[in-house]
Length: 445
Image (cartoon, one colour):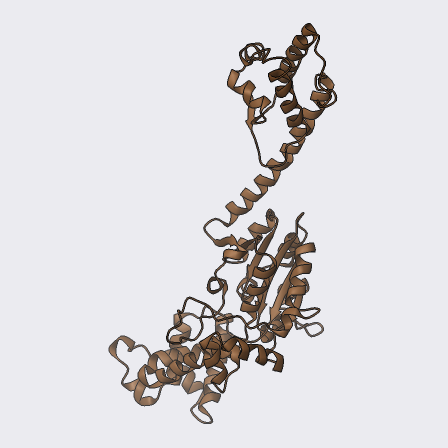
C-alpha cells in the first residue's frame, strides 16, 4: 500500500510527516510507539517509520489518518499543545487529506514524464545513438577525419577555428539558443568538407552540454521519436538527404510533431547547397512536383549558410591556432584547397583516387562511374548491376580485354548494347554521360 519515493522536491505532505515525527519523538516521548501505530493501521513498524521520515508515500489516506488521530489522542490525554514551530493544522484531518491529494497529483505528473522519456528511449533502442551532448564524439556525428601529422594522435580532433558565422547576429549559435527556448530546426547549408558539421557540433557542445543528443539511424526512427519527444533533446540529422530521400522519407508532419513538443526540441541538420536547391525548387505550372514532401520539410527549417572559404578574420584566427596545432599549420601551408577541405584530408583522398587509375584501374572505374552518376543526380545505393554496366566505359580497350577472370563479366552485353546505341564518336565523357543518364533513367523507371 506504499510507494517508494520518486525524484522531485518534497511537498506539503512530507513537511507534515516530518513535523508529526518530531512532535511524537520529542514532547510525546515516542508515544504512541511505531508498533502500536502499525498494529492500528495494519502495516509494519518499519513502514510507519518510513512514512514519518519521508522515505515512502502512503497511497491510502485512511491509514495515515489512523496515525494522526492516535498521536492527537495521546497529546490530548497529556494536555500537550503543539509547539509554535509546528505547521498549522498538524493534527487536522482535512489538512492531511489536502496535502495527500496534492502529493498524489504531483507524483502522477512525475510518473507521466518518466513514462514519456522511457517510451522515447525504447523507441530508439538499438537504432540510434543517445548520449549527453558533452559526451558526443564528433567523428560519430559526421565530422570528417583530419589529416595525419606525425606526433599528433589521429583520434584527437584539430583545434576548432571559430567561423564568422558562429557568432553572427543570425548565425549558428544565435539560432541554436533560440531553438533551445522555443524548439526549432536549424539547418547548416554548405558544400562538401567546408566544416558545417564541426561548426554545429561545437555550437551544441558550447550551448547545450547537459542536453541529450539522439542520432537516429533513419526517417522511421525520427518518426518514432516524434511520437513521444523527450525534453531537452538535440535530434541530430547530419547529411539530411539520408532522411529525406526514398519512398518513406522524412515528412513535414514528423518535424512539426517534434517542434510542437511540450518541451523544446532542437533539431540540427546539414545539407549541400545543390541538394537544397533541388529539394526547394518549385515545379513548373501544371508539371509534376517530385519534391513536394522534401520542400515541406525545408519550409520548417531555419537556414544558416556556411561559406566554403575562410574570411581574413578566420584566417587570422587559424594562424593563431596553428601555433598550437601542427595540423592547422600544415593545412595553411597547403595550396589548391581551402583550409576546411585540407583538414578533412581532401588532397589525400583525391591523390589516392588518382593513383588508383594505374594501381587498380577496375576499382577506379567503378568508383568514377559512381561519382559521375552522383553528379548526374543518382542517389545511393547504386546497384551492382548498374555499376557493372557503367564501369567498362572508364577502362581502355586493352584493360577490358585483359580483365582478370573474376571480372569476366565486366564487359557485359548491357554495356555492348549501350556502346552500340550511342556509338564511340565524340568525346568519351559525352558517351559516358549519355550512357549513365540512360542507365539512371532505367533504374528510376
